[in-house]
Structures are given as C-alpha cells and as structure tokens.
Image (cartoon, helix red, strand yellow):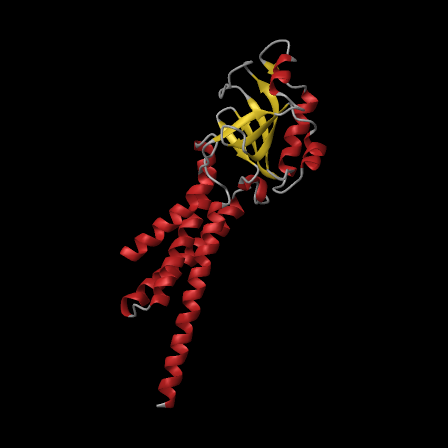
Amino acid sequence: MRMMAQYWIIMLLALAPGCYSGGSVSVTGPEFGFGSFIDSIPSFPYDAPASRQERTIDAFPKLEIGMDKERVRELLGDPDAEFLQYAGKNEDVFLGSSWGYYLHRHDAELVNDEHDRTVFVEFDASGRVDRARLDEPRSVLELNDPAYRYPEVGGNPMAIYIVLYLIAAFSCGFALIGAITRYRSDRHWSIRLQVIGASIVVLAIAWELLKPLLFTLMNPPYFDWRAPHILAAIGLALFCIGYLVAARRVAGSTTATAKL
C-alpha cells in the first residue's frame, strides 16, 4: 500500500505543471490591439455582423491542434484582438499568443459571462494552435470536445465516444481484477506493476469520460485536455511490461518443470 501511494503521488506531481502555470503576464498585441477594437465600437452591447458570426461558428470545428496562424486566418479571418503571453512580470520568456473573435460583447470594459459570446484561439510559442474554445453564455465548447472529435451515431455525437471508452474501461477493469487476484498468491514485482498500470489506465479512462461534464461545470476548464491520454499511455506501458515479465516467468517455470 505504501508503494502504491508513492506511485500515485509521483503521478500527481508529474501532472501538476501541466494543470497550472503561474507568474505569467498577458499584453495586447501590436497588430490587433484590444483597445483599438473597443474604441471602434460606437455603442454597447455589440454584435458582430451576421456574416462574420456565421463564418466563425462554421469554421470553428475545422480548427486543428498544430495548425499555423495563416491557416487559422484563412478559416476565421483577422481577429478582433490579439494577446501575447509572457512568463515573468518583466516579459522575460514568450509563452504564446491568443486571438479573440468577439461575436457579442455586452460591456466595453468588463467580461460578462451571462451574455458575451467569443471564440478564442490559443497558439504556442512557435505559432501553432494549442487550444481553441467557443465561449457561450454559461457554457464552453472546446476544440477537443468529443462533439468535434467523434462522428455522430444515431444523432448523438457522444454515443460512439461513450461506448468505446466503456468497453476499454471494462477490459482494463477485468485486467485489474485479475492482476490483484494473482498478486495475492504471488507478490512478484511484475504483477505489482500490472496492478499499478491497470489502475492508472482505469483512472485515465474515467477522467476522459468525465471531461464533457467538466467542460460544462468549469468555465474555462483548468486542466490540460491531453493529460488523461498521457496518463493512459503510461499506465498501459507499465501494465505491458509487468505482463511480459510475468509471462516469461511462467514460461521459464514450465520449461524447468518439464526438464525435471
């Protein structure tokens, strides 16, 4: 149990840097200044032209992680505002940038969660899309939301997503139960590795299944969408290593018994 707890602590510490970053500062970009955009609006509430709103909403699902700025500009057009992100108060290290498209802006100075409607595309330091989101009143649609990543089945885009991950969860759950049963009679490190690996995979799948709910409850979501996928890959690797070592042990024992 103590070793298991240590493994979980290590995993949580490894994920923590991806979930939070502090000591950063955001400034408006020189080409598309937020202040210039606000000053150009004669009165509020502001609504973007219908053609611009339609283009932005239709093009949002076509965005892809890793897409460059020129391709984003082709799809969405020029942003209303650009923000540059730096690490440290003195703008020591450039972290990336973001483009804002304001479909509805209720107030000039304050963000209004009840009414504002925006699309934000975030780029890493190399100018590639790292994240994109459509902020609606009281909800957030992520570029990586399953509704955009999986095809519709029976009119429900979540159906195939849920079915596939439930199958994976049951498979890994049975593997975990089997590993725990074997570990009770043979406390070899390879079987312990299987238990740890299967546990991590089940946790990652549960995390993935709960993401749509977290997207709804958290505005914006304060975690990296790739974390459960990375976690699942680590867990699967640990399980496979443990399984292969255990299989070699069994094969070796069988061969030795046959010789006798």
